[in-house]
Structures are given as C-alpha cells and as structure tokens.
Image (cartoon, rainbow, N blue to C red):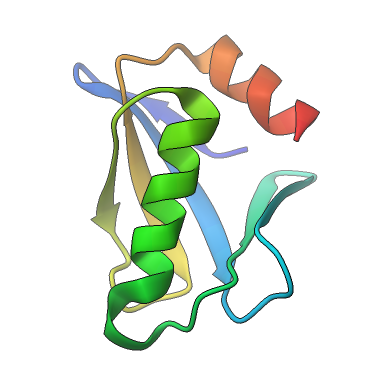
Length: 91
C-alpha cells in the first residue's frame, strides 16, 4: 500500500474501476483497487469513492489528486497508518 503521512492525515493512493457490480476494496500486493458502481461521468465515481471511504474509516476523506484519472490520491484526515492498513486488509 502506498500511504504517506502528513500533518493533516494520511495520503492513500488507490486505483479506481468504475461501473462495477458493487462497491468494494481489494488490496492486491502494494496496490489498493476500489470498485465503484457509479459512472465516471460528472464526478459520480469520485463522490461515491469519498462517501464510501468516509463511512469505512469514519473520518473525513478528501480527493487530493486524480480527479479525471483512475489513479487517485485520497487524504484521510486525522488517521493513523496502522488503523488504515488494518481496515483495508479486513475489507
């Protein structure tokens, strides 16, 4: 997993696969793959990604980069690296 610690929280790099059957998170080696149900049109997949990750981590989540790309960087506010790793490996 590519996780960087900052003063505001953690930056997590994910790869998004839109138009999937259901929302899901898979950790494949060093890569975090997120399956979103929404289309990427109009930012729908980005909104779903932020909403579901906020629920998953119970923290405020923001999209930092990758607004139009499948490779995205998310800021998870006030989170600790070991907590994020534990939650992602459980999902």
